[in-house]
Image (tube, rainbow, N blue to C red; front, side, top):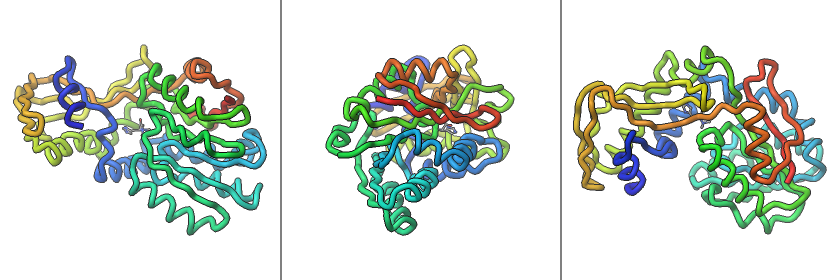
Length: 306
Ligand code: AVJ
């Protein structure tokens, strides 16, 4: 973390990796975001699963073992699991996440809710591929949902999917959830909500540097900014310094200077077009088989074959 922070704060323009959002406080703030009226993503994807779970599982093939990348607390996955257990009497579920605490919570919840489900958590950073997947027998459906792929630059997304694909067999499939390109009238409020929860989520990255690297960021001297970059089809999130100021980060012995109005980039959230979905899947060795969307076509759930 110290190395990545040093690198990002030394760069021009300044940046911090968006994965730093997700400490305990940030993860709780993200949970709050998913319930905001403006943040349509989570509820739209959930509605797609509610409407099409049976179709999705049928298309993926009989007797499935579910794997979920970045499972977190796996709350939307329950909809698919419930449907799966209508189709087969028992099932295996392998949630993969870097956070053991999030996984424990998922395992506990699922075991209570679904006695016929065997849950085997895997603590791993899936971005480097998951060799353990190759040892799982039977037909796998790998879930990568929640538009998590949106935080990657498309070439990085391709690299990640390619590493996952290497551990899969011909009968296996991938279920990818992507937020779709749409009007900035919908996108901007989703990333700059009226209650300011997204602003707090964004600023928590500075609070975190204060807590963990003993930095002295004056968090109130930064403003949350959300922009739509149509050319790159992505939302861009920044923290803008409202004044000329200096910050010291003792853990990396670094002085950081901000000009008034200077922006620190904290996140990209890519909004996929059909063309982009096709391209990243093809380039990573998958073939897009079918897409399910909501009636407004705001979110896409894509089934791809190895
Ligand atoms: C967790 C990456 C899907 O990009 O919408 C929410 C994170 N950032 N509000 C997204 C996020 C600001 C979110 N993802």
